[in-house]
Amino acid sequence: MPLALAQLQDIGDRITDRLRPWSRSAEFWVRAADIYTSYKVCQLRAGFVKDEEEREAMWEQQHELGAQKMYSLCSELGGLFLKAAQILGKPDLAPMAWVKRLVTLCDNAPATPIDVVRDVVEKLMMVDIRNMQAFALFLQKYDINFDLYSATKEMEKQICYEFDFVREAKAMERIREFLRVTNKKKPPVIVPRVIPEMVSREVLVMEFIEGTPIMNLGNEMAKRGIDPGGKIATMAKQ
Image (cartoon, rainbow, N blue to C red):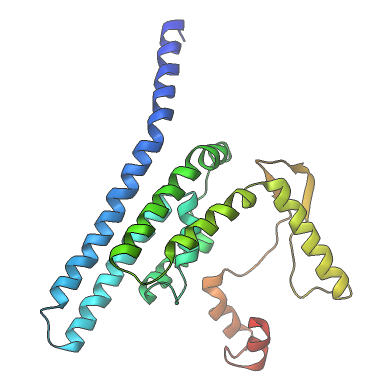
C-alpha cells in the first residue's frame, strides 16, 4: 500500500475511533426515545378507551412491540446493554413480554470477536453507563416510582471487576474449590476449570461443559420426568 494511502487510512481510523462514542450515544438515544414515545402514545390512546379488556389488549400489544425494540437495542449495540438486558429480563422489573424476549439474550447473545472485547470494555463502557444513568434519572423524574438510577450505579461499580478476567478466574477457582471441599468432592454445581496459562486481563479460557440453556429447562425436565412443581425441582431452585 502506498505511504500516502496508508496515512489516509490511519487518519480515517483515528477519526472513526473519535466519533464512535458519539455515534453510539446517538443511536442509543434515538432508540430509547422511540421506545419511550411509543409507550406514551399508547398511554394517551388507552386513556380514551373505556373497555378494560380492550385497554389490556392495547397494552399487551405495546409490550410486545416494546420488547422487540428493546431486544434489538441490546443485541445490536451489545456490550453493557447485554448485561442490562439480563437485569431487565426479570418479572419484578419488566412486563412479561419483555421478560420472555430479553431472557433469550442469556443464551443466544451475538458472538463478539476477541479483538473487539477490549475496545468495547475500555472505550465504550463508560459511555454506555452514563447514557443509561441519564435515562434512568429522566424516567424516575417523570414516569416511574422506582430507584432505577441506583441500579445503574451498582452496575457501574461491579462491571469493571467483572471484566477483569484475572480477578474473575481467581474467583471461579475459589468457588470451585469451596464447593468441592464442602460437598466431599461431589459439588451440586459444576464450576468450569480455568486454564491458568491462558488467562490474562483481556482473555479468560476455561473448560467446556455441556449444559441445558435456561430457555430449554422446561423441555429437559419433562424428558427426565421431573415435575416443575415437585420436590426435586423445589430443591433445585433453593
